[in-house]
Amino acid sequence: MKYPLLTLALFGVLGLTACNDKESTTTNTDTQTLQIATEGAYAPFNYTTNDGKLAGFDVDLANALCAKMNTTCTITAQEWDGIIPALKTGKYDAIVSAMSVTPERSKQVAFSEPYFANTLVFLGHKDKAFDHTNAEQLNNAKIAAQGSTIASQWLAQTHPAIKPQLYPTLDGAFLDLGASRSDVVVSDKLPALSWLKSDLGKDFELKGDEIDINDKFAIAVNPDDTELLAKFNQALADVKADGTYDKLIVKHFGEEMLSKSGN
Image (cartoon, rainbow, N blue to C red; front, side):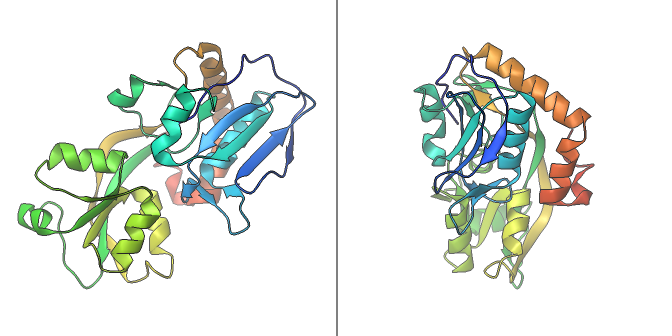
């Protein structure tokens, strides 16, 4: 989702500082920075707090990786639909934003080793029956999803006759579900669980079993940025080896996810 801007001559002593409304920045004595993009609207992986700061698993992981690389990094919110184009034009050096590895995306970006294993779920109102394995119910339901995601792609590939309501953000899909403008939402599991804990989501629940499509999240960089990709892969291995990764899993998702994160 991001664009590379630099030549990686950059590395010095690391420190965290505050940033602009939608930026989370790590700094050192070097004047160059590694530009990292995240959506900032996909809790609990990445989101924007009420005071305009970026937070979430992706943000903390990106900062931990930058620390391992002894690199200055700036993390910036970027709309999902424009995140890969921005990477390709050089606005960003990397994308850390719960991005699924797909054959289509792999033609445009280079992916790191995976850092999370994802599953899909349907959620709907507690008082309304819905079984996503029932073809009749599935075909007759108003289904919402975020566009340009693995969830909407899976729906198009497995149920091509269905025309879902697609939204620029997952929050938009959840808002319309809460307002009864759709019957169900198909989503990544953890963002769905996060929304169910909100005031708007309290009358909703997961419908049926989660759907395992062998989906993996990874960091995306420009295909020519092989040195940067190698540095990210080494940093990922390091944060997993020293326990940092497990601490972030527990912090953002709970201990029950330690055995389910796919790492």
